[in-house]
Each structure stands twice: as C-alpha cells, then as structure tokens.
Amino acid sequence: MTLHDLSEKDVIQIKTGENLGRIDDLLFDEHAAKLQSVILRGRGHLFGLLGYEEDLIIPWESIRNIGTDVIMVDAEPLPAQHRTKRCQ
Image (cartoon, rainbow, N blue to C red):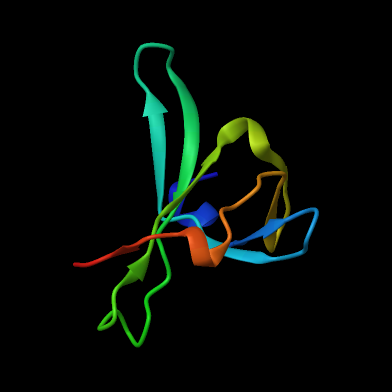
C-alpha cells in the first residue's frame, strides 16, 4: 500500500464515528526504520482565507483497521474549540 492509497481513504474515529479527514503525510523514524504516525492537515476556514485548524497527528499504533474505503483509528482528537489556527 502506498501513501497515495492511504490518502484516498477517510480517517474515522472509532468511538465517536467522527470523520477526521484524510492522511496527508507520514512521520517516519529513520533510526528504528518504522512509521511513527500519520498527519492530517488542519481543515481550512473559508477556503483557507480565515486560517486553518491545527494539524492532527495520530500515532501509528492508534490505527486499528485499514479497510477498502476508510481507516479506523482509536485516537482522541482535540476538541475544535481548543485547536489553534495556523496561517499560510
């Protein structure tokens, strides 16, 4: 499976059923030669004109199942009101 294959799947939080987004990047530990986590870029507000939510980093160990359409994770995302905006 490639990063492109992973990026086409929605990431779903198992406990709440919330769609967290899609994988945009991976963190790789070059010393241990293993994947550390996946990165979901923060969602834009008004096409990014009003900033972005903070990126969500999910440890690789939190991924419970990779299906044909979705990736199920057991990770607690920060509530939207506590996430800070980033500007690009």
